[in-house]
Image (cartoon, rainbow, N blue to C red; front, side, top):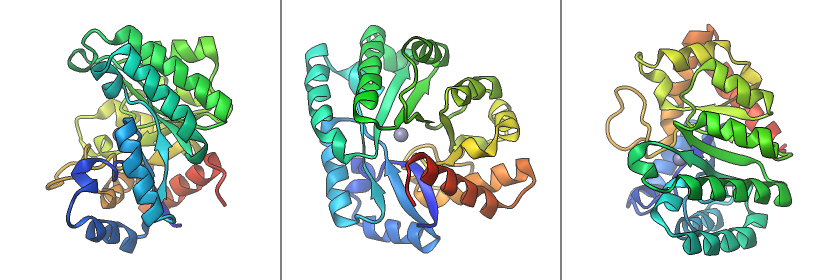
Length: 262
Ligand SMILES: [Zn+2]
């Protein structure tokens, strides 16, 4: 295991069903990006993760959770049933997530209170099963921090995926023990706030992710894939005035420490 993509959606049908899936995976592994923590969305998607894990046990880490998108698209009863499934499958996963809050109006619609309830339920599961959390928080950092103030972070903490916020916001998560995962957004010049965050944050809390097939870095053509991690690392390296390989190596070491892998 050399470099690690802390969050990618190889189990999303857009990648999972691709005829050239094996070639895409070989493209990443041939560039030493050879371990991928998946991003959990829904019960159907977790099944794809299990299929991938059976086929490529060395390359994929399982992460099951109810994404805010799933919650906002389903009724309370469906979410409760999915939580029951989640509790059954969680022992085999490395992490619980994506769990969190997405308060963009087109996602949230009328699901705010259901999102909060399902997020709190997943925090409880993280504690009960001693799993780190993968957090999806968009336009809802104040609420998420407030929830962790009230409920405490799970013992195993976790990370905020695809973080795009300010240093001050990152600091609040770091103070609670969470890592901060940075993806393609940092490569866009307009994202000054995020670049400032990357400049100031302690590197021992940094993870790197592609969030593929979404969140491609600047200038990327077509669906994003894990090899774009190099472009993310290069941008962070430029900001921190170190080598991209230092950034990739530090992020991999941080990931292994967080997930207790040797
Ligand atoms: Zn994701």
